[in-house]
Amino acid sequence: MLRPPPFPICPEDLTADVLSVGLGHPVESFKATRIGANRGMLGVTMRVDVVYGGEVAGPSPVVTKFAALREGSLASARRGGTHERELRFYDELARITPVRTPAFHAAWYDPDTAHFLLLQEMIDADEQVDQVAGVSVDRVRLVLTEVARLHATWWGDPRLKGLDWLPPPDSPRRRQNLGAMAADGWRSLCDMLGPELDAEEQALGDGLPDRVEAMLAGLAAAPETMLHGDLRADNLLFSAEGDSVTLVDWQGLGRGPAGWDLAYLMSQCLTVDDRQVHEAELLDHYRVELADAGCQATAEEVREGYAEAMLFGLVIACALPLISDEDEERVVQLAGVFARRSIEALRDHDQLWPTGP
Image (cartoon, rainbow, N blue to C red; front, side, top):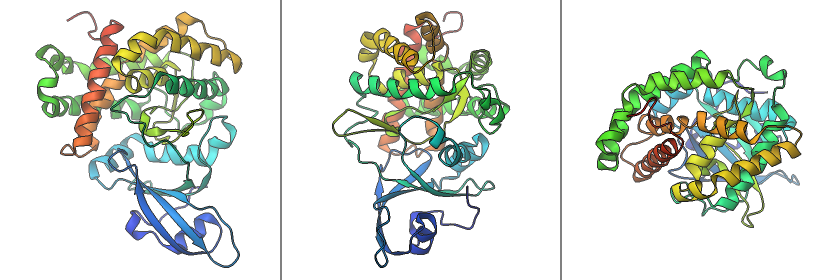
Protein backbone atom coordinates (compact mmCIF):
# COMPACT_ATOMS: atom_id res chain seq x y z
CA MET A 1 0.00 0.00 0.00
CA LEU A 2 1.37 3.42 -0.95
CA ARG A 3 1.59 5.80 1.97
CA PRO A 4 0.39 9.43 1.58
CA PRO A 5 2.34 12.63 2.33
CA PRO A 6 3.99 14.09 4.26
CA PHE A 7 7.31 12.32 3.71
CA PRO A 8 10.91 13.31 2.88
CA ILE A 9 11.24 14.46 -0.74
CA CYS A 10 15.04 14.57 -0.88
CA PRO A 11 17.94 12.69 0.74
CA GLU A 12 18.71 15.58 3.07
CA ASP A 13 15.26 15.21 4.68
CA LEU A 14 15.49 11.46 5.32
CA THR A 15 15.17 10.53 9.00
CA ALA A 16 15.59 7.45 11.18
CA ASP A 17 11.90 7.68 12.09
CA VAL A 18 10.82 7.41 8.45
CA LEU A 19 13.17 4.48 7.89
CA SER A 20 11.80 2.79 11.02
CA VAL A 21 8.25 3.05 9.66
CA GLY A 22 9.21 1.83 6.21
CA LEU A 23 11.45 -1.04 7.31
CA GLY A 24 9.28 -2.16 10.22
CA HIS A 25 12.13 -2.08 12.76
CA PRO A 26 13.49 0.71 15.00
CA VAL A 27 16.38 2.44 13.23
CA GLU A 28 19.03 3.95 15.46
CA SER A 29 21.17 5.61 12.80
CA PHE A 30 21.96 5.47 9.10
CA LYS A 31 24.36 6.71 6.44
CA ALA A 32 23.10 7.61 2.95
CA THR A 33 25.40 7.65 -0.10
CA ARG A 34 24.45 8.62 -3.65
CA ILE A 35 24.57 5.81 -6.21
CA GLY A 36 24.12 6.00 -9.96
CA ALA A 37 24.99 9.71 -10.01
CA ASN A 38 24.36 11.33 -13.40
CA ARG A 39 22.42 8.27 -14.56
CA GLY A 40 18.87 8.55 -13.32
CA MET A 41 16.67 10.76 -15.50
CA LEU A 42 13.66 11.05 -13.21
CA GLY A 43 14.98 10.03 -9.80
CA VAL A 44 17.75 10.25 -7.20
CA THR A 45 18.91 6.94 -5.74
CA MET A 46 20.78 6.45 -2.46
CA ARG A 47 22.41 3.49 -0.72
CA VAL A 48 21.44 3.60 2.95
CA ASP A 49 23.48 1.67 5.51
CA VAL A 50 21.22 1.13 8.50
CA VAL A 51 22.02 0.53 12.17
CA TYR A 52 19.07 -0.92 14.07
CA GLY A 53 18.35 -0.56 17.75
CA GLY A 54 18.73 -3.41 20.23
CA GLU A 55 18.96 -6.97 18.92
CA VAL A 56 17.08 -6.24 15.67
CA ALA A 57 18.62 -7.55 12.44
CA GLY A 58 16.72 -5.76 9.69
CA PRO A 59 17.80 -5.32 6.07
CA SER A 60 20.96 -3.29 5.46
CA PRO A 61 21.99 -1.73 3.20
CA VAL A 62 18.77 -0.70 1.48
CA VAL A 63 18.04 1.62 -1.43
CA THR A 64 16.02 4.81 -1.17
CA LYS A 65 14.79 6.49 -4.31
CA PHE A 66 13.39 10.03 -4.55
CA ALA A 67 11.91 12.00 -7.43
CA ALA A 68 14.32 14.35 -9.17
CA LEU A 69 13.55 17.90 -8.03
CA ARG A 70 13.83 19.52 -11.47
CA GLU A 71 10.42 20.95 -12.33
CA GLY A 72 10.70 19.66 -15.89
CA SER A 73 11.15 16.13 -14.58
CA LEU A 74 8.27 16.47 -12.11
CA ALA A 75 5.99 17.92 -14.80
CA SER A 76 6.81 15.02 -17.10
CA ALA A 77 6.11 12.55 -14.28
CA ARG A 78 2.75 14.15 -13.48
CA ARG A 79 1.79 14.22 -17.15
CA GLY A 80 2.84 10.64 -17.79
CA GLY A 81 2.01 9.05 -14.42
CA THR A 82 5.46 7.46 -14.39
CA HIS A 83 6.22 7.61 -10.67
CA GLU A 84 2.86 6.19 -9.66
CA ARG A 85 3.24 3.28 -12.09
CA GLU A 86 6.64 2.27 -10.72
CA LEU A 87 5.47 2.35 -7.12
CA ARG A 88 2.29 0.42 -7.87
CA PHE A 89 4.25 -2.21 -9.80
CA TYR A 90 6.41 -2.93 -6.76
CA ASP A 91 3.45 -2.76 -4.39
CA GLU A 92 0.88 -4.73 -6.42
CA LEU A 93 2.41 -6.66 -9.31
CA ALA A 94 6.03 -7.62 -8.63
CA ARG A 95 5.12 -10.55 -6.39
CA ILE A 96 2.93 -12.13 -9.12
CA THR A 97 5.31 -11.45 -12.02
CA PRO A 98 8.18 -13.98 -12.39
CA VAL A 99 11.05 -11.60 -13.16
CA ARG A 100 14.01 -10.59 -11.01
CA THR A 101 13.24 -7.35 -9.17
CA PRO A 102 14.48 -5.87 -5.87
CA ALA A 103 12.44 -6.77 -2.79
CA PHE A 104 9.96 -3.99 -1.95
CA HIS A 105 9.91 -2.51 1.56
CA ALA A 106 7.70 0.61 1.45
CA ALA A 107 6.72 3.63 -0.63
CA TRP A 108 5.16 7.07 -0.21
CA TYR A 109 3.60 9.08 -3.03
CA ASP A 110 2.05 12.53 -3.53
CA PRO A 111 -0.06 12.58 -6.73
CA ASP A 112 -0.37 16.36 -6.66
CA THR A 113 3.37 16.95 -6.95
CA ALA A 114 4.72 13.56 -8.21
CA HIS A 115 7.19 13.46 -5.31
CA PHE A 116 7.79 9.98 -3.93
CA LEU A 117 10.00 7.93 -1.63
CA LEU A 118 10.71 4.26 -2.38
CA LEU A 119 12.52 1.83 -0.05
CA GLN A 120 13.75 -1.40 -1.60
CA GLU A 121 16.41 -4.09 -1.52
CA MET A 122 19.99 -3.19 -2.39
CA ILE A 123 21.22 -5.32 -5.30
CA ASP A 124 24.96 -5.87 -5.78
CA ALA A 125 25.65 -5.23 -9.44
CA ASP A 126 28.46 -4.78 -11.94
CA GLU A 127 28.92 -1.02 -12.01
CA GLN A 128 31.00 -1.13 -15.21
CA VAL A 129 27.95 -1.65 -17.43
CA ASP A 130 27.31 1.61 -19.26
CA GLN A 131 24.69 2.80 -21.75
CA VAL A 132 27.13 4.95 -23.69
CA ALA A 133 29.71 2.17 -24.12
CA GLY A 134 26.98 -0.34 -24.94
CA VAL A 135 25.87 -3.59 -23.32
CA SER A 136 27.45 -6.84 -24.50
CA VAL A 137 25.51 -9.25 -26.69
CA ASP A 138 25.64 -11.94 -24.00
CA ARG A 139 24.13 -9.60 -21.43
CA VAL A 140 21.38 -8.45 -23.77
CA ARG A 141 20.60 -12.13 -24.30
CA LEU A 142 20.19 -12.47 -20.51
CA VAL A 143 17.77 -9.55 -20.48
CA LEU A 144 15.75 -11.07 -23.32
CA THR A 145 15.35 -14.27 -21.30
CA GLU A 146 14.01 -12.27 -18.36
CA VAL A 147 11.76 -10.14 -20.57
CA ALA A 148 10.35 -13.24 -22.27
CA ARG A 149 9.17 -14.44 -18.85
CA LEU A 150 7.53 -11.08 -18.18
CA HIS A 151 5.80 -11.02 -21.56
CA ALA A 152 4.70 -14.67 -21.49
CA THR A 153 3.16 -14.30 -18.02
CA TRP A 154 0.91 -11.42 -19.07
CA TRP A 155 0.42 -12.15 -22.79
CA GLY A 156 -3.26 -11.61 -23.58
CA ASP A 157 -4.11 -11.79 -19.88
CA PRO A 158 -7.61 -10.35 -19.26
CA ARG A 159 -6.37 -8.91 -15.95
CA LEU A 160 -4.51 -6.25 -17.94
CA LYS A 161 -7.78 -4.56 -18.88
CA GLY A 162 -8.62 -4.19 -15.21
CA LEU A 163 -5.37 -2.35 -14.47
CA ASP A 164 -6.64 1.02 -15.66
CA TRP A 165 -3.52 2.74 -14.32
CA LEU A 166 -1.41 0.81 -16.87
CA PRO A 167 -1.63 2.81 -20.10
CA PRO A 168 -1.93 1.14 -23.51
CA PRO A 169 0.20 2.65 -26.29
CA ASP A 170 -2.59 4.93 -27.54
CA SER A 171 -3.91 6.11 -24.17
CA PRO A 172 -4.57 9.87 -24.09
CA ARG A 173 -1.95 10.34 -21.38
CA ARG A 174 0.75 8.43 -23.29
CA ARG A 175 -0.10 10.12 -26.60
CA GLN A 176 0.08 13.52 -24.94
CA ASN A 177 3.34 12.78 -23.14
CA LEU A 178 5.22 11.22 -26.07
CA GLY A 179 3.77 13.73 -28.52
CA ALA A 180 4.96 16.59 -26.32
CA MET A 181 8.43 15.05 -26.10
CA ALA A 182 8.64 14.78 -29.89
CA ALA A 183 7.26 18.27 -30.50
CA ASP A 184 9.17 20.14 -27.81
CA GLY A 185 12.39 18.15 -27.64
CA TRP A 186 13.55 17.69 -31.22
CA ARG A 187 14.92 21.19 -31.79
CA SER A 188 16.63 21.16 -28.38
CA LEU A 189 18.14 17.79 -29.25
CA CYS A 190 19.47 19.14 -32.55
CA ASP A 191 20.91 22.19 -30.78
CA MET A 192 22.53 19.94 -28.18
CA LEU A 193 24.14 17.60 -30.72
CA GLY A 194 25.02 20.16 -33.39
CA PRO A 195 27.04 18.63 -36.25
CA GLU A 196 26.51 15.08 -34.96
CA LEU A 197 23.26 15.19 -36.97
CA ASP A 198 23.52 16.10 -40.65
CA ALA A 199 20.97 18.31 -42.41
CA GLU A 200 18.91 15.37 -43.65
CA GLU A 201 18.76 13.85 -40.17
CA GLN A 202 17.78 17.16 -38.59
CA ALA A 203 14.79 17.23 -40.96
CA LEU A 204 13.45 14.12 -39.22
CA GLY A 205 11.79 16.45 -36.73
CA ASP A 206 9.35 17.66 -39.38
CA GLY A 207 6.13 15.80 -38.71
CA LEU A 208 7.67 13.68 -35.94
CA PRO A 209 4.69 14.11 -33.56
CA ASP A 210 2.35 12.85 -36.29
CA ARG A 211 4.58 9.84 -36.88
CA VAL A 212 4.59 9.09 -33.16
CA GLU A 213 0.80 9.29 -33.12
CA ALA A 214 0.59 6.86 -36.04
CA MET A 215 3.05 4.47 -34.39
CA LEU A 216 1.05 4.42 -31.15
CA ALA A 217 -2.20 3.79 -33.01
CA GLY A 218 -0.63 0.89 -34.90
CA LEU A 219 0.87 -0.66 -31.78
CA ALA A 220 -2.47 -0.48 -29.98
CA ALA A 221 -3.92 -2.96 -32.48
CA ALA A 222 -1.35 -5.67 -31.62
CA PRO A 223 -1.75 -8.35 -28.90
CA GLU A 224 -1.10 -6.96 -25.42
CA THR A 225 1.25 -7.95 -22.66
CA MET A 226 2.90 -6.16 -19.75
CA LEU A 227 5.87 -3.99 -20.72
CA HIS A 228 8.79 -2.75 -18.65
CA GLY A 229 9.01 0.18 -21.05
CA ASP A 230 12.50 1.46 -20.20
CA LEU A 231 15.02 -1.34 -20.78
CA ARG A 232 18.24 0.65 -20.93
CA ALA A 233 21.54 -0.13 -19.24
CA ASP A 234 20.93 2.10 -16.22
CA ASN A 235 17.87 0.00 -15.36
CA LEU A 236 19.55 -3.40 -15.74
CA LEU A 237 21.53 -4.63 -12.74
CA PHE A 238 23.84 -7.42 -13.91
CA SER A 239 25.54 -9.68 -11.40
CA ALA A 240 29.33 -9.40 -11.25
CA GLU A 241 29.50 -12.99 -12.53
CA GLY A 242 27.41 -12.02 -15.54
CA ASP A 243 24.90 -14.84 -15.07
CA SER A 244 21.80 -12.92 -13.95
CA VAL A 245 20.09 -9.55 -14.34
CA THR A 246 17.63 -7.68 -12.12
CA LEU A 247 15.18 -5.25 -13.73
CA VAL A 248 14.68 -1.94 -11.89
CA ASP A 249 13.12 1.48 -12.54
CA TRP A 250 9.63 0.48 -13.66
CA GLN A 251 8.49 4.03 -14.39
CA GLY A 252 7.88 3.16 -18.05
CA LEU A 253 5.54 0.30 -17.09
CA GLY A 254 2.59 -0.18 -19.42
CA ARG A 255 0.67 -2.62 -21.53
CA GLY A 256 1.10 -3.13 -25.24
CA PRO A 257 2.91 -5.23 -27.84
CA ALA A 258 6.11 -7.04 -26.90
CA GLY A 259 7.98 -5.34 -29.73
CA TRP A 260 8.01 -2.11 -27.72
CA ASP A 261 10.39 -3.58 -25.15
CA LEU A 262 12.44 -5.46 -27.75
CA ALA A 263 13.00 -2.45 -30.00
CA TYR A 264 14.02 -0.14 -27.18
CA LEU A 265 16.33 -2.67 -25.53
CA MET A 266 18.16 -3.77 -28.66
CA SER A 267 18.33 -0.45 -30.49
CA GLN A 268 19.61 1.44 -27.44
CA CYS A 269 21.70 -1.00 -25.38
CA LEU A 270 23.65 -2.61 -28.22
CA THR A 271 26.18 -0.68 -30.25
CA VAL A 272 25.11 -0.19 -33.86
CA ASP A 273 27.62 -2.79 -35.05
CA ASP A 274 26.58 -5.39 -32.47
CA ARG A 275 22.90 -4.90 -33.24
CA GLN A 276 23.44 -5.24 -36.97
CA VAL A 277 25.46 -8.44 -36.57
CA HIS A 278 23.44 -10.16 -33.81
CA GLU A 279 19.92 -8.77 -34.18
CA ALA A 280 18.37 -11.80 -35.93
CA GLU A 281 19.93 -14.29 -33.52
CA LEU A 282 18.81 -12.32 -30.47
CA LEU A 283 15.23 -12.00 -31.72
CA ASP A 284 15.15 -15.74 -32.29
CA HIS A 285 16.51 -16.31 -28.78
CA TYR A 286 13.64 -14.23 -27.42
CA ARG A 287 11.12 -16.23 -29.48
CA VAL A 288 12.48 -19.53 -28.13
CA GLU A 289 12.46 -18.26 -24.52
CA LEU A 290 8.91 -17.01 -25.01
CA ALA A 291 7.87 -20.48 -26.18
CA ASP A 292 9.63 -22.12 -23.24
CA ALA A 293 7.58 -19.86 -20.96
CA GLY A 294 4.37 -21.06 -22.62
CA CYS A 295 3.67 -18.40 -25.25
CA GLN A 296 3.93 -18.95 -29.00
CA ALA A 297 4.92 -16.31 -31.58
CA THR A 298 6.30 -16.80 -35.08
CA ALA A 299 9.67 -15.41 -36.12
CA GLU A 300 7.87 -13.08 -38.53
CA GLU A 301 5.57 -11.75 -35.81
CA VAL A 302 8.55 -11.04 -33.55
CA ARG A 303 10.50 -9.26 -36.31
CA GLU A 304 7.54 -7.17 -37.45
CA GLY A 305 6.58 -6.10 -33.95
CA TYR A 306 10.20 -5.16 -33.26
CA ALA A 307 10.47 -2.96 -36.36
CA GLU A 308 7.10 -1.27 -35.86
CA ALA A 309 8.09 0.04 -32.41
CA MET A 310 11.52 1.34 -33.42
CA LEU A 311 10.56 5.03 -33.43
CA PHE A 312 10.13 5.04 -29.64
CA GLY A 313 13.90 5.27 -29.08
CA LEU A 314 14.08 8.50 -31.05
CA VAL A 315 11.31 10.01 -28.93
CA ILE A 316 13.29 9.23 -25.79
CA ALA A 317 16.29 10.99 -27.32
CA CYS A 318 14.02 14.03 -27.73
CA ALA A 319 13.00 13.79 -24.08
CA LEU A 320 16.52 14.05 -22.69
CA PRO A 321 16.89 17.84 -23.12
CA LEU A 322 13.47 18.32 -21.52
CA ILE A 323 13.89 16.21 -18.38
CA SER A 324 17.65 16.46 -17.76
CA ASP A 325 20.29 19.14 -17.33
CA GLU A 326 21.50 19.97 -20.85
CA ASP A 327 24.81 21.24 -19.46
CA GLU A 328 25.80 17.89 -17.96
CA GLU A 329 28.32 16.02 -20.10
CA ARG A 330 26.63 12.70 -19.35
CA VAL A 331 23.31 13.99 -20.69
CA VAL A 332 24.93 15.14 -23.93
CA GLN A 333 26.64 11.75 -24.33
CA LEU A 334 23.38 9.89 -23.74
CA ALA A 335 21.49 12.11 -26.16
CA GLY A 336 24.08 11.47 -28.86
CA VAL A 337 24.00 7.71 -28.30
CA PHE A 338 20.20 7.52 -28.18
CA ALA A 339 19.82 9.58 -31.33
CA ARG A 340 22.50 7.84 -33.39
CA ARG A 341 21.49 4.30 -32.44
CA SER A 342 17.82 5.11 -33.07
CA ILE A 343 18.49 6.66 -36.46
CA GLU A 344 20.63 3.74 -37.64
CA ALA A 345 18.08 1.17 -36.41
CA LEU A 346 15.28 3.04 -38.16
CA ARG A 347 17.38 3.21 -41.30
CA ASP A 348 18.17 -0.52 -41.21
CA HIS A 349 14.46 -1.36 -40.96
CA ASP A 350 13.25 1.13 -43.58
CA GLN A 351 11.54 3.17 -40.87
CA LEU A 352 13.65 6.33 -41.05
CA TRP A 353 11.19 8.10 -43.32
CA PRO A 354 7.47 7.32 -43.59
CA THR A 355 7.52 7.20 -47.41
CA GLY A 356 11.15 7.96 -48.21
CA PRO A 357 13.14 11.18 -47.78
